[in-house]
Image (tube, rainbow, N blue to C red):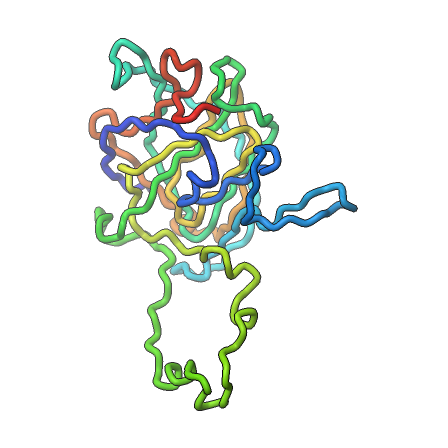
Length: 296
């Protein structure tokens, strides 16, 4: 059952979905060559007898179910969501009352505290976006919010289960002296080489749970995705259910882990509006399409 939380009146502009802008929330999966840019963080190799360029680890699949209260393991699952277009609300522009805006009211946010979740659209062309406002245009929005510190989220007596790191173990005297060189225990003169202590992806940022707090609605953001972009929400990222807009359904293949324990697989908050509540500005009169911060 969703946890109710008050939502202030706020109109949120939509932004382009780029990896740099989406970094705090997860990963954007796209072909860098098609964008005319490079991703130095992605390793590439030739594949398919030299006819394909393979990008390694384009997104991170994370599984924190070993940290869940039930300790029930999570299994990798792939589902398909057939998402129909959402209805918009027409209202006067907040900056110019004589013009009209098309708004999407955000009333639910959810998170998957123990797993990442990747949405892969099927059948949309790279040109599918909000660049032009036509009846057949189909695109989707990605709506996310940061997580508040737990101390500022205490609107319920018992916080929902969430993966918390184990308490730090106090180091013993032996642990402390074992780092000395030469070692008093093995007489080693030098520390082990970095290759012995670091894994293949040691240079990448370590993935951690977001924390048990509620969403920070004052920092909620909305992105418009192209048809050739998939998106991964990091574990514990607050996000709206998928928002498809335009002329038709969008089929998404969704990849995640799940263990069948409802409160551990998905947690929801219901945004109870104070006044208008939180609305994403999808279209504005005179813009000829999405009212985005940067044109596609």
